[in-house]
Length: 274
Image (cartoon, rainbow, N blue to C red; front, top):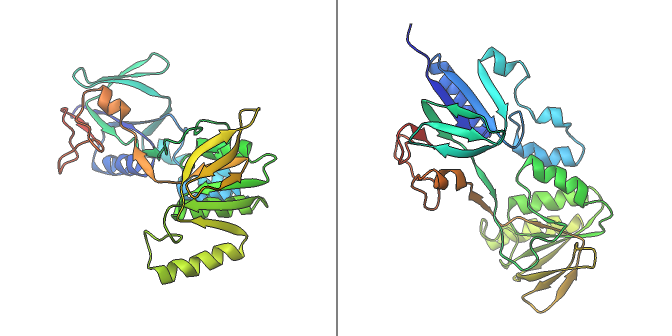
């Protein structure tokens, strides 16, 4: 009987779990999925519905609890802090070392930072993960007015989430129309009218210059490029995402805009894929 290979997948998002499922169909190798975010795979599009009370957290899991054991996929909730690509092993936050025959980096993306002064103030956050959802629950307490920076689908979803808690929302975007980078002006205007009917104020054609905080260290005001200011207690930035590449870069892999791979998803290091 052929020896089983040790396959480790870092990341339990759609890419990592899809790879694990198909690898299991193809063979009998030992598969371990490691995730620092959650111990289980969840559907990210459901996060907004969990916030609005339309779904419970358990409903975010696309697979039953026994799916992983039935498919012989081990889930490990931990953080990978180092990859030794030459030695074909990795180190976890608890100090444990794990060896692999094949390694897949499916570390996904995170919300892009805007580089504004004051971006690290309390009450300023992004929205791409389960951690962001938990942080949002903390940040909305006592909030009367929130700003959403961005004019794409995620920004619209975040505005809807906040309006479900009766929070006044202002969307700020540098485009002249909401979703203007996606749609013709005529269609963007239709969406703008719909959003405004639901109590969302729009500030188009302007940008955030800096964020100011109050004595408590929480964001309190936004200064905009049109010369105006906006008083807020919560800011959610929805200006796109960027790939998570620190592990790959530190391991010596070729990283540019993202992790460089060939048409077989092989990276610049043997037996490491992305």
